Length: 53
Image (cartoon, rainbow, N blue to C red; front, side, top):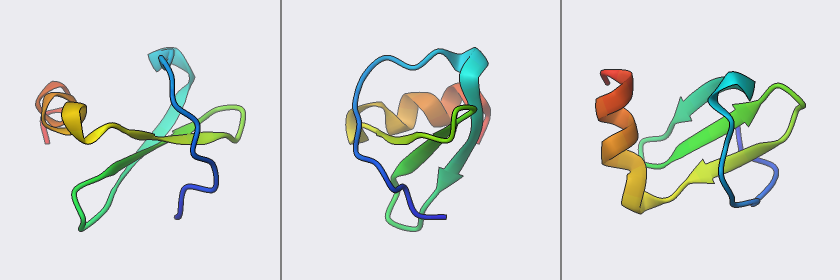
């Protein structure tokens, strides 16, 4: 799935539907309202650690 939107901000984890990992090392966050955003490269490593990936 491609991220259709490029919105940035703080995300409520209760509203996250899924995390999509790409081969490029980015993470797309799909939200329950149908919107999506990317995790900043700065936080990708930390997010992966928290998720146990």
